[in-house]
Length: 321
Image (cartoon, rainbow, N blue to C red; front, side, top):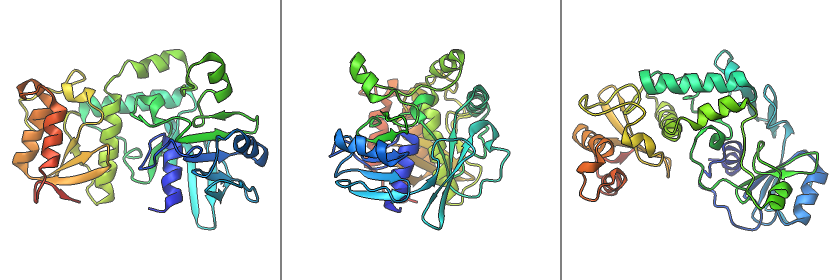
């Protein structure tokens, strides 16, 4: 992967994608103008460990690298251009499924309609195994996943910063300005720009972390030519005797392996490393049982059994794809 594309994906989503925060400055920063960037440099928020996206002609002495861009990374309906041949579309979630997406795209929740569409898609996936075509496209990334129940344990100002024209620095496009967070002594989490009731609807679905992991797994398989794959726990189990539905134990484990089936083939996706492995049918069903019935394990944890499976992987059960 092109290094700056890795940084771009991380900045849009809040996921690390292999980047490690905690160095000299944020791993990735997006600056709206030169003044915003220079203020961040003076405060030590951007430094030798930072890759910076900034308008053409803006310099960042002391930063690791500056990648010029034109357009916007935050406005729905806009487009950001990097160099002569790379473009990132930014679209509102509720209309993206009706558009012809021509390349890499970030989906943003900007209005109530977007949040409603996201929740409807997630509910359909959970209960019916029906997945939105646009969201499982490998070229699409859902922005600010932490605001939508996704797991992003490394997200924060050490991973990514948005430096706006008002002189504020925040984690991503939706984070509380860092100055306000310092005054209150609290971190600056992102908050969806929608009605409070819709934010409560998101918070009331604790299985959304698992949903996000399943979306990543489906994207991984689609990138390898597997269309229409099924995901254990979403509308079905491969072993029909196992429990499904929002109370199933594995749906509370966003970091646990995701089990998929494409035709007669089984696959395991590991969210933490973003790796996909092909699995034999017997191994796949054993893993599914371990995830859904952790009480059967000696140590009582589905995750330990799943990790054990991955650690013992060998062809064909664990061949990377």
